[in-house]
Image (cartoon, rainbow, N blue to C red; front, side, top):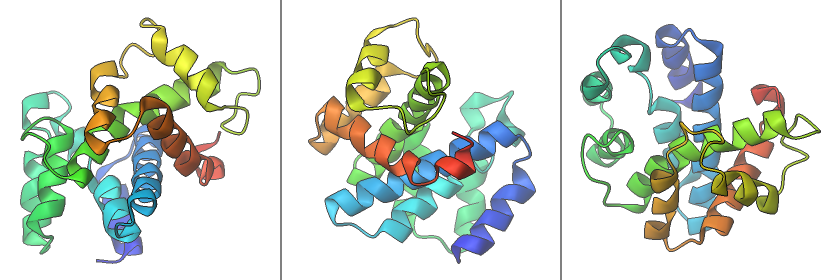
Length: 181
């Protein structure tokens, strides 16, 4: 499946503009981490693009999140590695691979980055840097929905929190116009 086909699919399932922006942020950040690790950026980005495909259908049944996506991905012929990573991001299965841990940690990290951008004087990603993100990260009440323990699981990628947030930020800066930040 091409990115364009996957994007059409995502837009047919996801209507909330902010959720679409989140999906694009996870896609871009996953791509950036794949580049860092010397992995296939298109494959990792595809996992990021499709990771929340069933979110609007399962929003009131969080325990079902990713189950429907997994079924759809199997029907479309996606491989088990990508399907497993999608399921692992929502804790439906335990993360094992670098891709699994990337989606698991990137998912909440993008929320932290967006919240930091919105409260930064510049109101943009361009104004952010890692020290600013680290300061916000340490404030437990700031972006409280951004699960700190999941973000910190980037240690399973053998990355420091600072390096990980820097890669996430860099990935998101690449699509700042699309994110409106």
